[in-house]
Length: 85
Figure 1 (cartoon, rainbow, N blue to C red):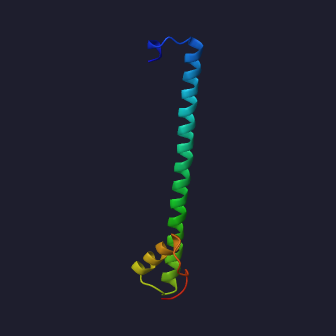
Figure 2 (cartoon, rainbow, N blue to C red):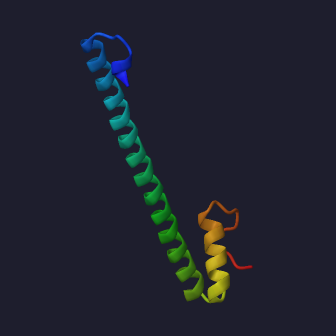
Figure 3 (cartoon, rainbow, N blue to C red):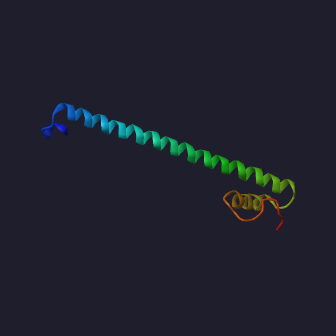
């Protein structure tokens, strides 16, 4: 691609280094974002499990209702985590 344009070799090298740095930084940033997203999903799942177990232990809800209310609470719902209906 760069051979069709009359550009000095040192500029070609600088261009290749610049593109390489952009690609490496893109991959690094993508990896960090993926890690953070996976961590957030894991934290939400742990929250749902904890709150639904608490609902079931306290006989507040059945299994399906406990899971539904725990998901709502852990995703920023308004309802208090341990209040009754």
